[in-house]
Length: 138
Image 1 (cartoon, rainbow, N blue to C red):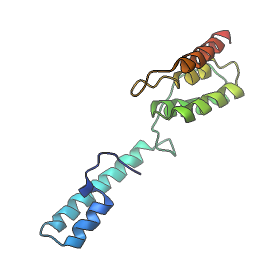
Image 2 (cartoon, rainbow, N blue to C red; image 1 turned 135 degrees about the horizontal axis):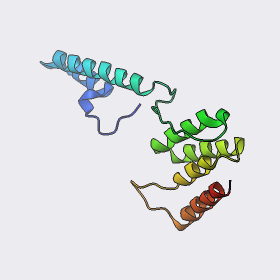
Image 3 (cartoon, rainbow, N blue to C red; image 1 turned 90 degrees about the vertical axis):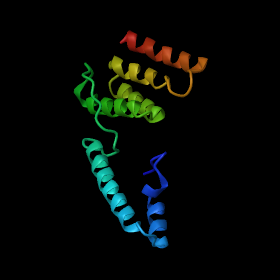
């Protein structure tokens, strides 16, 4: 797993370099890295509880058929982890399995909104609005 912005001395490569240099203080550096690695592994384990992909938990009570609830929650978690393409596929699967699930269309429409890096194109807006209309129709 890659963690952008992680200081080099806290990476496996940085640790190996420090051990090869055998500089004074390398052992204390090794201890700091070991403690960090253990804490990071624990945090990753906690974050992945309930999700094999490490998405964390996301849940919304929906009135769709019970068999699609877990699929909806997974797509919802993907959406909240900025995996827009995979979230769209998940919401589309929910809609295929339960065409009366209005929230599946809402979720699919939300995948076209990327507020942190770009405004939706007019094609994105058209696609999202079409999904919203389908949701209103069910």
